Image (cartoon, rainbow, N blue to C red):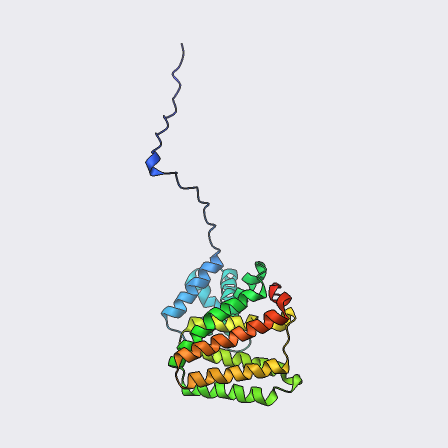
Length: 266
């Protein structure tokens, strides 16, 4: 006597109009407890409107407050310190304190991504040429008198040391400061941090680029034209002068250091 075998369900007809079924998506790995705790601490900082310099609860209180182990709390605090959100002070009165992140943390992240992808140096040149004229245009409408005064000071100092080859590093710092003040004066924090990050990576010396005294004098002349446009609140002129300044720099770099521009960012 044979037994009836259970039959498998018949396959459902495929609805051609419905299209193919979505591909299987791999499940995301759960985030580590320390990452989740770091986000929770950061949310508490923002919710409580804590300012730079304000202390956070001691480590032992965080263990009780968040219900996490001491190791997890310490790792979360280190993550926040690396991101620039807090400062871990040592000694008497030490502990975690709120800190205002600066562009260096943004620079570190962008630089790491570009190094992993072996991005050539010229990629930074292209991005900078695309956004800085717009930043300068906004700055012409929003720049404050004290910022204009600082821009004028950088130009004066650059003129003073332009012929002193021992002051090359100082000259480059003044040049970076000039562009940073303009980015800050745009009134857009994202432009400020992005421009500062690009300047932080854009040291041509690391890929073998160098500049003549004549080129340095050209930089000063360009800065003066940009300063004049900013001081008269001429947004269109500010855009054009910055675009011309960066175009001349790029032309100089491609003419004299074409190979360096193709090298990955070290």
